[in-house]
Length: 75
Image 1 (cartoon, rainbow, N blue to C red):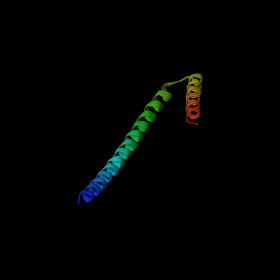
Image 2: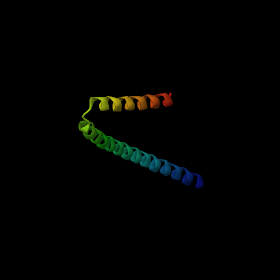
Image 3: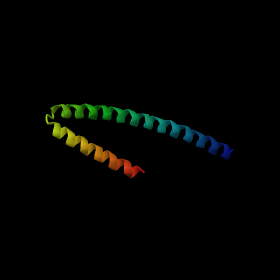
Image 4: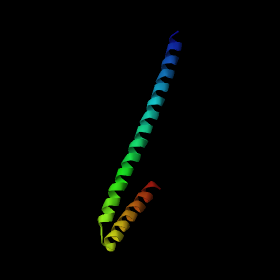
């Protein structure tokens, strides 16, 4: 009888943890998506306010440099 109880308990724990993990993952995906949308909008407004082409090119150069550094770290 105790073995059955332990088995049932472990199945319930696995079920709850998998549902919880799925809920957390879904929440994180939604949060990141919303955050990225807000960040994109904010960056678009800043970009529109920058008048100098040289400033825009300098900012793009910095962003590309940062992205390339991040890519090298992942490898």
